[in-house]
Length: 402
Image (cartoon, rainbow, N blue to C red; front, top):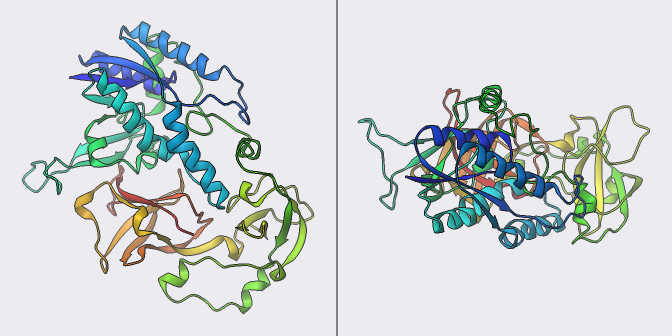
């Protein structure tokens, strides 16, 4: 079997490559460049060249062929343009999720297969297992192909299955995750003992293949900066509101008007702010921190609330539009009228939350046992099995509607 390892220059993919080589696979490495523009980035223009140089040294150390592929056009069309469009609508996208489903396990996979690869391996901390029946045999999906499950990795501090929540069964069947059973200290130990050039390299930060960015400056490449009012909503505003009683009402955020609060400052453009944001607001004079509780793109107003438990931050339900619902475990897909108990994350690293999926004609509703803080339109809600396993399985995901 011939395997292409996506070698980024980081320690995780380096050790993944090393393990595959030690296991006797026919392995080759490929580095992908996905971004050229440096406007708004905080690390300088040569970062990708440095990453490529390290990746090439790692491949040489391990003794595997090394290739380079430029996927920047695909990344712009399928990830970056989507990201700019979502911000322009007042939503907060997750480009890292799209990078995996649209680039690493699509465009990159296609490039790897042209070079003869049967599978693509990455340095993600997650696991893939066959879905089996009571007899221990692997089950098949609707198309007759074997079913696979995606589980979180052994390292609970690094597990990355959340970012792979939009993979489909075909992509998963072609994927390998060699370090899924390891924790980060063990990965660094293996790298150090093997003398890999990436052994002490720090973990990457920021947007996938773009890097750490000054978000307003980065977004100003495509989105015009226009000043507007900052309106604070006092807790007393909610005393006059009727408590929601249905899941549809619970999933619907409060729509504010400037008259509902008081103007306390100015901002540089409503599209640059996200629900739950605390930093970068530039407004003082309050006992507790201020948080963004809503943005209105049409009127270019952002609404703030004081305190991390402000009522405007809390909601018990969310909705995912029908076309945005994605199932990895296609055999568990719900039909309208059906429900399922699950565990859910609405952001990376959030502890799993108990919830119920309710499928309706107008989409999927997720009703949480406990009110959630900062439910953010554009982000991915990811649902996992409801078992007590230390390695939760990702069942599906969807973009939060509002």
